Structure formats: C-alpha cells, structure tokens
Image 1 (tube, rainbow, N blue to C red):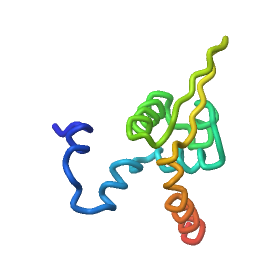
Image 2 (image 1 turned 90 degrees about the horizontal axis):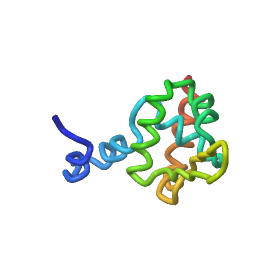
Image 3 (image 1 turned 45 degrees about the vertical axis):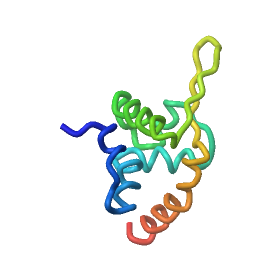
Image 4 (image 1 turned 180 degrees about the vertical axis):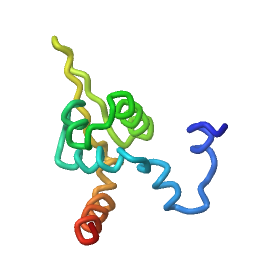
Length: 108
C-alpha cells in the first residue's frame, strides 16, 4: 500500500499529477473554491461544499492542512470555534479554481 508520505517523496513525472495529488478528490476543489471568499467554519464549509459527511470533510480538511494549503485556527472560547482559511500557498491556486469554475459554467 502506498501512503500519503510515500507519494510526497516520489517526484511526479507530470506537474498536473502533482496538482491533482494535492487538490484532487470529490470535495477538496469545492472546499478550496469556497475558501477563496474568506474564512469559513466547519458547518458552513460542509453546507457550501454539498454536505459531505463530517468524517469525510474532516479527512479532506486534514489533508489540505498537511499540504499547507489551508490553515486551521482554533479560538479559545466556549463553545470552541474553529475557522479555516487559505494559506499563501492555497491562495496561489485561486486562478486554477476560478478557471475550473468558468469551465463548469460554460459546459455545465
């Protein structure tokens, strides 16, 4: 079985493959697209992304955080508040995501 860390150590023969390793999946592009407009809380992301299960959304968010695409901010208050936002690296995907959205509008 190939683990996520194995994938990162091997060089991809194609830059598109590398991009898809980071942003590929059913929910990641929608999560990232919705974070382009600013910080979001978990439930808001879940609703905007199309209601993935909490478990799946959590896994996708963790992978994006591990890849340093998003940042998770935990606020010390009761009840606890967690917000997600794009890092500088994540913001560099904005043109890719916007082009995907334009293509989807034109061909959807």
